[in-house]
Length: 418
Image 1 (tube, rainbow, N blue to C red):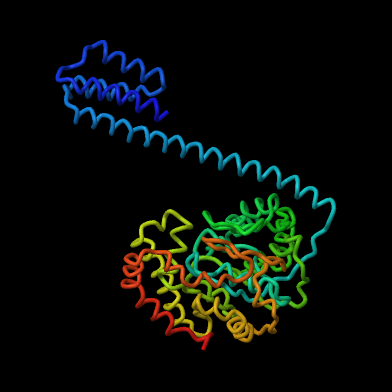
Image 2 (tube, rainbow, N blue to C red):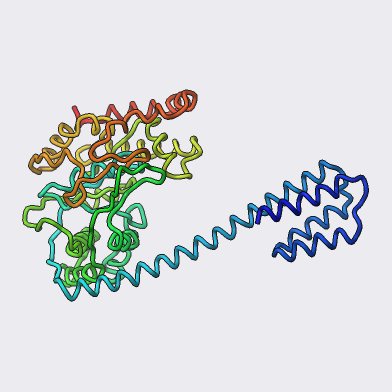
């Protein structure tokens, strides 16, 4: 398509390089040609520019430039439409395929009911800060229900009311953010690999989560508990979610806590989980940017990206000041440098026994590669500290000049590593 536009633009450029107005026939030819290739707007623009007497080489160059930009806009529009269609088709295929899987599981096995009405340990901070790593370190512990992937609630904290909302409405709203990922993992296995990362091998690990079993368990739990508060709704949700996790390795008799990670949260967490704990990880600002900018295009603008990083760090410090006994500030560099020491102290803080598995990242008990924006390796990637060296010295200095003071302030509030 761009080739056709360039041919047309070059022809216009050729005609406009003469110091005379092209004939009416030439103008008609342009309109006909453009219409033939499905771009009637192109012929109109060329005709208008030519008839206005644009007869210099510079004007011809401007025509070509405008046409090329117009094509880019049109391509972007078409690509956007195609992406939306693909998303819709993908969701429909996942839904149908998972219905078949759920029916198969339903006839072959009866999921056991799990009681996960437990304190929630929420790992909350901006992405690319180490939340996935910490959640994988908790994964294999026999006293922990580890939520298998990011807890994606629609709001910063779900605004549900069991006195107004029905059980199916609440069950749907609490699982909606994780539904597509769960369906995808059912078909293709669990994978969390950053875009652009170089994988060290096949990272897909088996997981089976039954949507049907979740709904059944949620409704049974609702009838048993008759929730009157958000916390009771969350307890029913967690119990139903883990009941539907067919690949769950351990029973619930030894479980003491639930761990989950997600984006920064607000005050409502402490209202609903007075027995819970929020762990917020912070990464050196330049290290964070070097990783984040490889993950998402929205972080390409350094000023905007670092504003998001500062908001996450400042929110964690603010919550620490208000709830000192229920917030842990954790530097990513310390976690990577001394995972055994950090996890031993966290285990003591959380009231769970020390276990060597806490120093090794796993998914459902299986070793898993690092969730890196660079090359993925099995275990803890020590090179994740020092990503700032991948930036230009000028950019690194710019980031540190504007953000290092916030990072140092965060470090002053750290108590778990002292």
